[in-house]
Length: 234
Ligand code: HEC
Ligand code: HEC
Image (cartoon, rainbow, N blue to C red; front, side):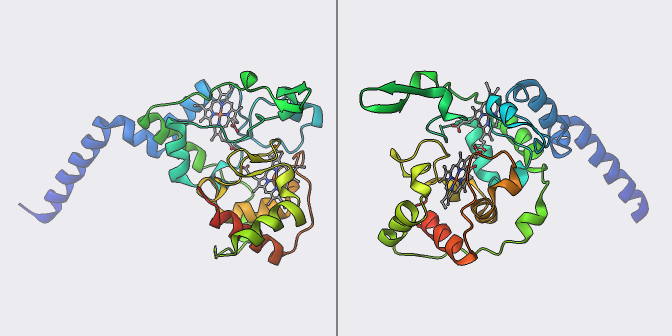
């Protein structure tokens, strides 16, 4: 048998294998993930820019935008979370919708917070392929150079709550801290460190209608906060 012939045969075999394993093939093309997303997720999540929506529209959104998912999430976390989602925002996507006024002050009415839809492992893989391919605003990620280091936990905690005020909206421990923003003790597992740095510095560059204020932090302050988030990471 001539070598050229052998090559031809093996190519034919390869395409047959690809055709047979249709699922895996389309997953790499993200087509299956896209279809699944449109069917099961797009009712609540936007996947296109919402830079130009009004604040009123923003407050009516049912779920966080996934527009820049590929520049935000850690792939492994995303794939595994989709099969067994846990709550990330103690007060829901917009906490004011879920607040209950009591004699002890305002608390979150947990009965109003729904359970997130879970998908099977194959679907999670397809959805993750599709979501991780959504990468607008890459220039913001490129501006960040992050190496996670260590820091003193007590000093870091003081900085987080007292000096930088992050703790009025974010938890740095399960059940401890504010409820209007996403929990941050899982942030280093969930999110790309460059995204955390960039969002902490200028959240409005990611989302002009963000509910998080820009605290005008310098690189060194952001670095310290990131080291703390890394030290407390769960
Ligand atoms: C009924 C509305 C609804 C549907 C349908 C839905 N989600 Fe969500 N999703 C939410 C809400 C609300 C949150 C915020 C949950 C939290 O923070 O605890 C969320 C959070 C997420 C997050 C984390 C986002 C972040 O920035 O922290 C991802 C990823 C996600 N959903 C993916 C999906 C995928 C993929 C699907 C389809 C299989 C889907 N969702 C279907 C409402 C929905
Ligand atoms: C006034 C409340 C508030 C303060 C103060 C605040 N944040 Fe936020 N933060 C939010 C909200 C709300 C979000 C979610 C974005 C949204 O819903 O618009 C958010 C999102 C984030 C995210 C993205 C996390 C994710 O899972 O999407 C990071 C990282 C973050 N904040 C870090 C910080 C740090 C660090 C500080 C302190 C310097 C801080 N924030 C101060 C309200 C706040």
